[in-house]
Image (cartoon, rainbow over all chains, first blue to last red; front, side):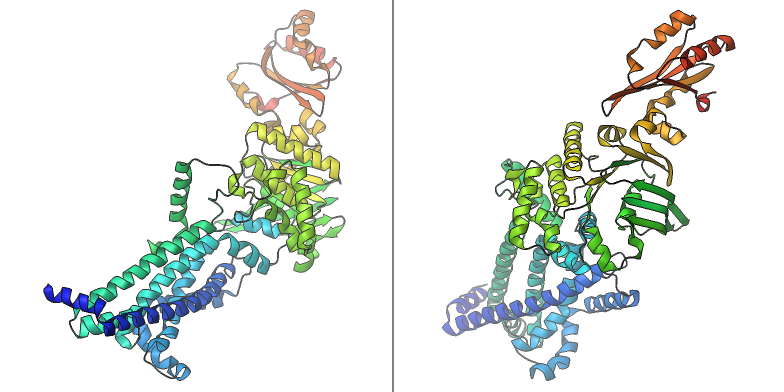
Length: 261
Length: 334
């Protein structure tokens, strides 16, 4: 126990270790951010295709194409992340020039996370009331206008909640990437804890990851709720505090996809 | 003018085809408030969606001012839809937009410059009586207010036709009346043709000039509200206009007649006179009077005595009355 505490203290006080931790935080943040942005973009496009392109969607696409996209997404989602990552590193090596380090991990992370994001986006988009879409059609909207001006804005709170889930999942995936040469806090935890039995340092790195997750989740949920005008009180009818809280709670449950709970 | 010609709609289902509409022929004149009534599942909503081709009819023609919508390209159809606005039972407002932005939406789609759209949207807010709700979100409004915003949004594209799909069915009676008044007002002031889909006869009585009765996908009756309400010719029509008629088979009577009052005379003591003048006792099985567009209409179901000669005497007496028509109701017998 003493050894554990000493290791922890060392991780927090030794300048070299402090530097390493700060580096780790930085690497984790930028690789997570970069991978999340790309994965969300790709996932958003795929999700829109999944919803708009189906038979009853606003812009039906050929059935075989939809089937193909669905199967590819399911395959990518069913391969364990670490294995998918190992398979993808050599694929992307020519593109990035290296298969180790933080930048090398970003593209495989994107490929692994995008199908997951696509499903989150799909769930959010499907929650848009069919009647609202019908109303838009009755006004003479083109399929693109319906997607861009109706479906996406109406599902914005759910989408943001989904992106927060994606961010946190990618943070976790990124930590695992430490096993195969990726950087960041995950690498520190694995190098010290798994390879050198330095559980104190590992613990500090893990706590830092936990703190990051908490911060992202809290901020993300706040943003998602504040974007949702189905529960707003701005400038309108006043509700009792209890009623408003109840609504927010109810709405949180509704707009946060399953994977997040 | 809206003309539906030999319109039918078939939905393929797991156990064979389901014919939601069959051979509908209908003409709706400019400036009419046209009611389409029927029980749930009669095909009313499908029919109204065929008018703007949200549902594509399996067969037939949909002519708006002589132009067959079925022949239009998708782009031309979208263009035409802008002149046919629609409001819904569930309002279908964009929940993440303010009321003002909701009203701007159809103008945004049509490419109206934002500043002009906003100016017009404020005018429409005024017309529907909610000038202070510009920056409120739909979630902050009551059902009636939401429908008013939906009506303002429907007006924003300067339509020739307003389709109302059960527009008041989710509202309480008082709110329903105020929304109907607003629709009537819009019809009169802006000359917009209104098509009202409803299962509530009260709605038709309140505002409609013409009515069509839909039953199991067939259009069984059509005409002015006065015609159809004072003397429904079909079983389905009677069921809707005199829903209480069904109760009479509890009474042990020989034959049943319906006495219809065509304006004005419903306040004369007809039954008392009948009893005094002919000495025949009739049984009042049901009675209903209505106020349709300022004229009094009413009907009464009478059970005639078993004695054939007494019954004939009563019939003759009733037939001799002015502004009263009498008919036997054979389907209630036995």
